[in-house]
Image 1: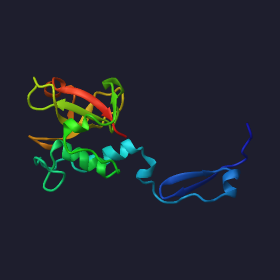
Image 2: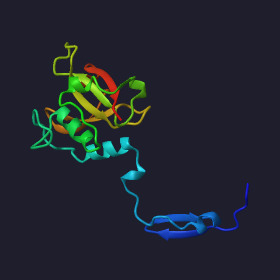
Image 3: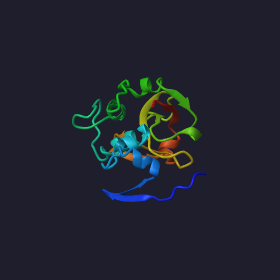
Image 4: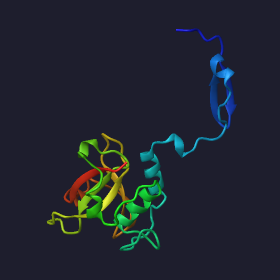
Length: 167
């Protein structure tokens, strides 16, 4: 390993930048504060979805005055150039099927609607948890608007259908 005789430490906008002699020759580094481009697309989708926490539920809506579950999901993904159908059962046909064990943030999680005996998809959310964590998701709930819930709750556990990866 080549010995580097010195490090030049600069404190710029709260960040430490280390310049080796090789880097010193090419000083085209940025002094700007990091932005969302440093995060994965999945991180950015989840971060954007969080902005709508507390927004009220409105049937059939994709943002004007509130959201329904698929309208919320459409709205969030549209921000990242991904067009989804405005119906949870149609969204469930898109993307790649993922096992629940492989689920990660940004994946879509699908549920039966209010009838737990139905076999049809009737609800969708966006997973916000990391792999190997209990599954949590953000969605537009009829009762509470845009909220975060856990798959471990009895209501959602009995209605779980599948997970799809869109990103």
